[in-house]
Length: 254
Image (tube, rainbow, N blue to C red):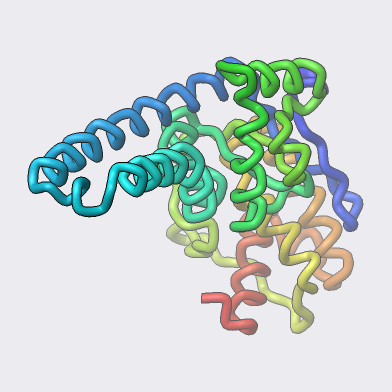
């Protein structure tokens, strides 16, 4: 994968995190799938509206009110759909989940509700004049494939590999006959915990060699600070998992 196809983030701990960027094709497929789901919702709501109209409710409210309600519902479905799912599903919609894409912050951290709402409100601009023309143009000239909403919210869309047989990222259960490394009395700082947590969240989307290299770099840096010799942490990922679990438990991150 070339450097143009990935997002590289230098953390305060001088460790590089790499995320494979999603291109126009994969993002268009995700939007197409989401649009099909939206049309399904429109059809269901249309049938409900016909049933309501048959009982004379629209006539009682007035034609203008009926039109206003329909416009509000259509707007909510069109833009609220994306914002709601991305906020609740940690940067994913059903379409993104099926195509293994995720929205993250430029820093590599998960997006929050504000990011989700902002980037999707500006979807109005990205869709102008039609068929996401402005969004496609901005993605073509952006080295990180960003549309207008991504620029405003400080977000980027990346690829994720499907989680096949992978348990919780916080699981620290050792394999039979394999003991976890002895934990130091000192603990991770919040910045260090966020670095480790970001690696856990993205490690399944990394190439195996990149994943092992990043785990070794982070484990070495933290091991040196916590005075844990290399022979006490033969498995870099299990060492990081145990450190994170210790920090999470002490801070009641459950």
